[in-house]
Image (cartoon, rainbow, N blue to C red; front, top):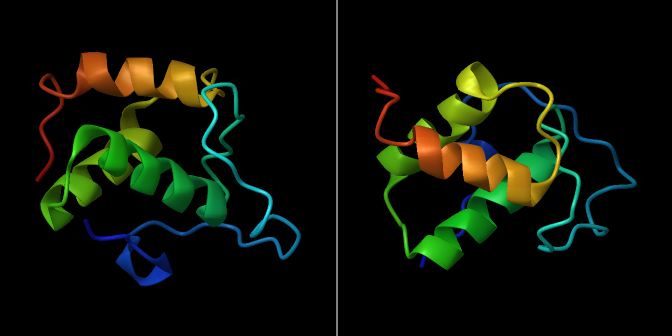
Length: 93
């Protein structure tokens, strides 16, 4: 299963030095959508849990996180719930 990297991202993110090694995959984790490490970790964990591998699917998920997700959602659990409900309603080109 591919693990996506910084080079895979289409949006611009912050890359704070102190965050790179402090990310887990708990449902209670707060995900900062402006933080590249958080976004990459979120997408890679989501893909692993759902058995996804497609680059197009990666871009769709990144699009949802950046363009469609309400800014009030913060935890991995809240974000995943939104993504799963919105997945088939949101068309990405």
